[in-house]
Length: 329
Image (cartoon, rainbow, N blue to C red; front, top):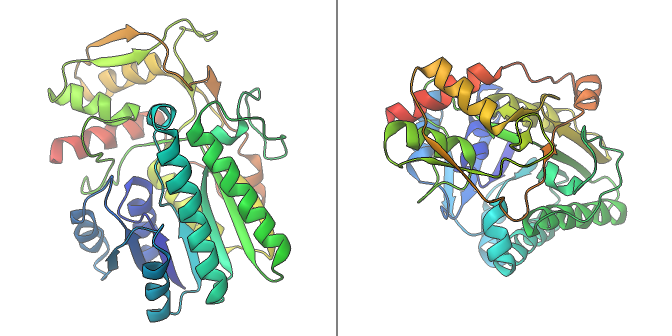
């Protein structure tokens, strides 16, 4: 298939591009590079040995998005492009609502205009709000704990309504959990601009000495060690989930969790990182971060039974690959 990947220079998008190309698909990337670097495209090409068509375009710009669609005959869209920091969304909610909702609406409108009827959406476990883990796809979505999660839930509703109104359209919502790790080559990984918002690149930058110490937001949650529990998934497992999702699409709406089904606390993750990589990560406990919940992990049984997909890599694999990538920078 000829697949458009919005946000394809970003962390999850770039790894998914690699998996798509290695599965025989052709990839076109659209990314505004607000939280990624154009050099990532070169590294995708180096890993795969295939050319990637790249456009430096913001998906909220409908005329530019339309221009790209007019030049290509896309079979499917995987829509990653969007702002993604929980903490930042609390302090900059209007930026998140504008960018994430408008970007999704624009890509939907243009896809309908050009008859591209396969649409995979990068959603998030944050749409479950404060439901009790493990999260199951059939759960009623409660108000999300932060604006980022609300934008994902609202985009899901937009896509659900679009499917109802357009016969023959296929939408798959992938609600995934906490991706960490990097490609085994060490060439691509999570590379945020500025100080990281996500846990793993913060850990690796502290381990390398770029940052003084890790801040752990709260140790008074109702969890085994008081720190937040998340379902960490290797980014390459996640990427492979996108490949099978786009290859096995059915008419109408499909929803899948992509996670391991196991929760790991922040302190547990730090301890495994130190053990596997033989390096200390100094940290301090600070106040809870607005918008965070105590526990978040998946019931991933539906993806396994319907798509034949299951996360294979362990926490030890994830921290090893993350550190290898950091050392190569």
